[in-house]
Image 1: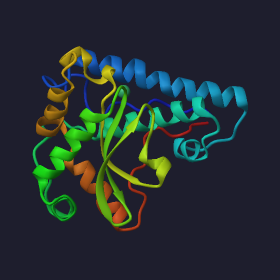
Image 2: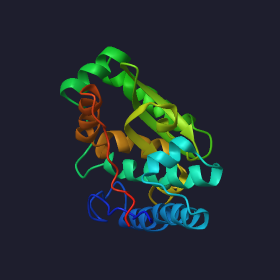
Image 3: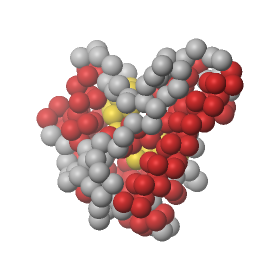
Image 4: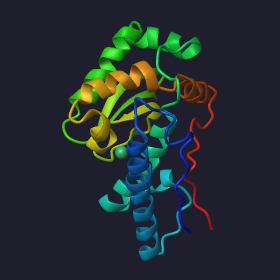
Length: 210
Ligand code: FE2
């Protein structure tokens, strides 16, 4: 039962000048596609019956399987964490929760930037909902808060392949641009509203197809 690579939620040029079409073409068409293909190869070799990437992530039948499934899921979540004309500050319930749990947007932005900058090597920085509160965390390599029963609201990919074409080694400028011009607060707000309502917050487009 193979998984499919979901289309980007926007065109290849939609995030320019902040992320180039070349970056999106490589990142989505090569890196993300590669993880989906690896998941499918492992499923085919093992004859496992799996219905979702989340199931693989939680059950984690081996590092290679976890890494490929988590990276397939993380990348789908990352694409939705950005939007053309994004950036700025959230509003409504999410803004209130950020004020309550971080002491204001600027304090959140500082924590998020520190997490993204502080991830040595490859990985991810996240805004998550956990036991009634928002928090920032980072995960190395393919790590995902799903594996710790936390609910992701937003993520930034800080693997070098996410920014090297456009920012070379300047991860800080990439992270700052993500917050100022790319972040999709509507997506994060929907995820928060869903989890507060007791619903599944994010249904990834990467689903098993028969
Ligand atoms: Fe990536």
